[in-house]
Length: 200
Image 1 (cartoon, rainbow, N blue to C red):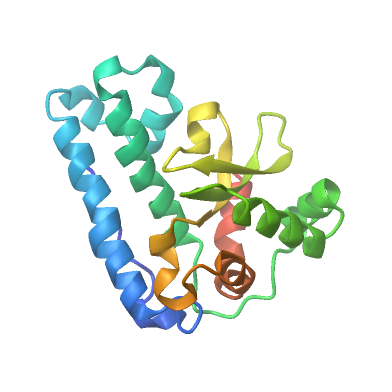
Image 2 (cartoon, helix red, strand yellow):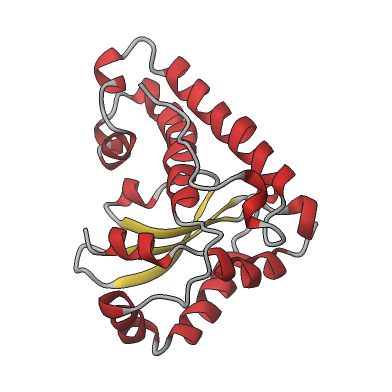
């Protein structure tokens, strides 16, 4: 059964980058809403509900047509947010290191250039969606964006860092200033967790 993940921090711990009210609404209303709709949509498919959400998304093309919309929108919302919470931290971190840093430098030239390219891509995502750092099937890193709650897992890609650019993720603090939100969020990225996803 799908459940709301417990955060590794309190709602106010990410201030001033993300305010407590935004975190609370995002976690207990938006994310929980995706979970409840996912469960309701899979009621008649108990064998699917036994599967991990990431497994469902990786097998998206083979799912029954009747559940694809539910899994894409609500399952994607659950998986995307679960990853998002896990890569946020109030602890100060210097940035990526080791093999992850080397891979970023090999793919983008430098960590600074990676951030610049990521912010440009995520800021340019039309409407609601996500900015991603993914590892492709060759093991190389790429920056991509997806619309709405689409997950890179649906295309056989491994997300290792995902930033929510739906307005509900930042609007109380930043209003329509998505680029400001994106340039600030690096201060609360949990690079140790990103490295764990990269090393899978």
